[in-house]
Length: 162
Image (cartoon, rainbow, N blue to C red; front, side):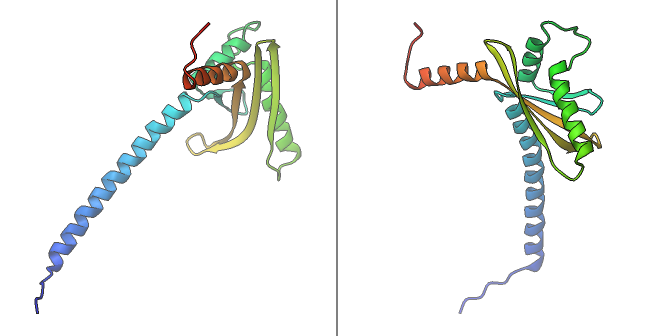
């Protein structure tokens, strides 16, 4: 009969090394997930804004910046959050005041002109970093969405521009 002597110190040492590796991997995953998440948010088709209840912009991705510029065509640049979007936020704030035990999400569409139609969704979020409730706004540019679908389909089927 063959017996193997297990040294408990070796086992504990391996276990500690495994723990350190898992800890490093966990830290790497957290950092990597953060970078990946940021990249995904920046490259979404939808614009993303986070707004305080005092109309302060806390976060704006690139798509949302482009959409805000389109909405600002006839307004002054010092008021960065367009009146149309702030109106939706005010409605959400008022809904919370009237119905504090309910969760609300508001949706609306803004028709600037025939080729500029935006769907706006607003809902509450809480951020530990800000320590206040904020409003998460997603803005979908219908024209850009249709354009992206057309480009994807032309690539998929090997179509060429006319």
